[in-house]
Length: 477
Image (cartoon, rainbow, N blue to C red; front, side, top):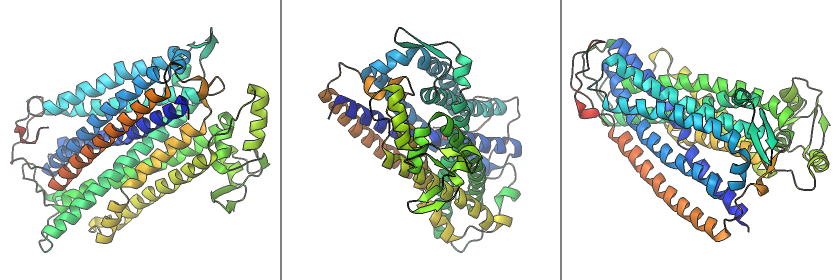
């Protein structure tokens, strides 16, 4: 084993771990902002209760995401110095924009939101959570644009062995980025929606066990503006459940549409990844799509990749021969088993989550109560969207191997030459143990606050738009 192998494992582990928190932060921020907007417009107290409850979970996740994300930037210089030297002039620009614009926008206004409940006018305070949520999505855009450049480099020239950017606009509007950003952000909303669905279902089951025989009025339509919301109110949790079901269904449609766009770009820009994802070894016209090994749908792969059912799709072995002639000797095929199955896990678990949301909307139509069996399925389905998104990341990153920058820089030539196997092994062990402890800590915190439920403020009058709210700081974070 070489330092390169462990360096790849280390970056993969830290990235996957960081990726557990990123999609939830992106989607949950917008969801919390939407709940506070509903409170601002209607004055109904259950929206405020939900805002503070899910806002607390959002903050726990946000803090963990920041901590784990910082480590990745250090790895560029420590384990991947040759890569950093080659791409720094290009890759560094969107990363700098992310840090100086998006992250500071996100963190600054999130701080104002946390500490501004009893200090800022109601309308200004609402604007702070929207600014923070928008900052999270801007951050995702810049990071994904930088990542897309590695798969489809544009707007640069190579001088003195380094890539130098010639067109920042070309980098930020890379066709791969245009398809990748809505696909990943849409998937993040599916992850956040799945999380809220599971939490809401748990709270509904909890309230049913606590007071099974007591009828509960529908506060979503009858609660006066200054009424006291109840943590034992199933109608309140039904509100969050329905909102999350709608968000997941809409985001799922976005993911499906942009996934089709991404498949067509793979055919043009990353044919080896497309062939590996389908297990296609040789060039084939009218190529079939295989949802599972041994099951083929004629013409579908050619149609999905080109809109032409008779088009030729390149296979891995034929591409290998072409790449050897173009780039020299070497193995240009990724780990085909991982790419093949990660694609199917991504699609299968993603469709299951979207189908669950559509079924939930049907079952709860016309104010029908949530069936107990469906609530339990929602709890069991909690990991599915996250696993689907991780599988998508594995497909994306492992599928472009052996390149760090497609056609320009091989992974084997990207690792730091002065880092030994022992050094990488020690840091890998430390990060793995540390991240394991952090994972346990976050899980304990989330479970504790989900089980405890929201705190409920005392009844209070609604402040005007030009005066500071009079909420007491009992629910502050």
